[in-house]
Image 1 (cartoon, rainbow, N blue to C red):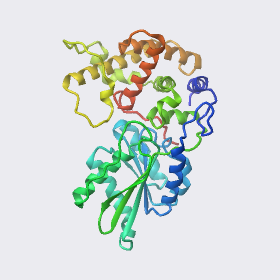
Image 2 (image 1 turned 120 degrees about the vertical axis):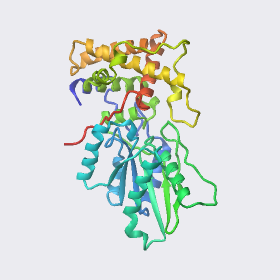
Image 3 (image 1 turned 90 degrees about the vertical axis):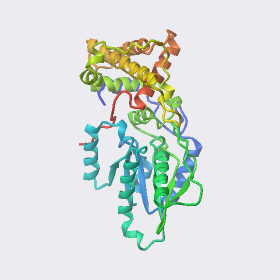
Image 4 (image 1 turned 60 degrees about the vertical axis):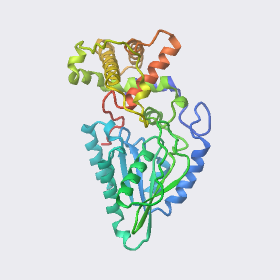
Length: 371
């Protein structure tokens, strides 16, 4: 963590930490404690574990408390949401896990072919026990909102096409908020031998000593926004973008729009970022897509302009803080949010986080590959 970012994190969040004991932040609800106990018990009888992590935070999205138990099991690490991660860096992460002698695969839970490759790896790992065990258990674990339930649903759909079953298809509940799945459910995915996949609720560790790890989890959506605060999370995102110089790369691959070419729709309408969330709804029409793309361009232009015009040092806490303040103002104009001091900052934060989480600001990886 750079000096500017480290100072800003401490100044914005204090030394509160992410702890289960209450204090300033209480993010470890009772159902997580009960679920953690249930998961530990079922891990003992599982033949293989699919540990789902967020591709944008391959290390930060690991549940540290479960790692000792997972190390003793057959395990496949599924780096989900690969479509939101930078492909130029993901191959380095694949090499890292390979050097750790750990099976790892990049996955997009909404892609049938991607999930199919995961199943092939799982079957390969189970091949040695298939001949002697009539029933096998595959457990899916991970922190909240890494896409476990979406992955389970895709696995179930593929399994039904392979082994038609008379019983009605049961789907795992999928939603954009962490903690949607609050119990453990089993789904039969194969016959001869019978293979069951156990979906589990997302659970976090009771305490996270490193504040930045907690912020990464919050930014990826694994901790509810209301726990940390949207403005704090957005401030952290802007700090990371500035320190990495990410807005400067937008000029490179978006030259025409950065140079001032804009869409000019005949009718004005407000931006509705709720349509970007991954829910089961009809696809937005072409005009909706034009407006969303136009707003993304405005946001990118605002961050590019403020960073290029900045004459301070982003490594210095006070300079970085001033830059971020300027960017909040620029984003408010870019997003066409009416001037209401308190509410405007919160609305800017919410919209910026939605753009990041849905990949509209481009692919990104928050964790650095260990050297």
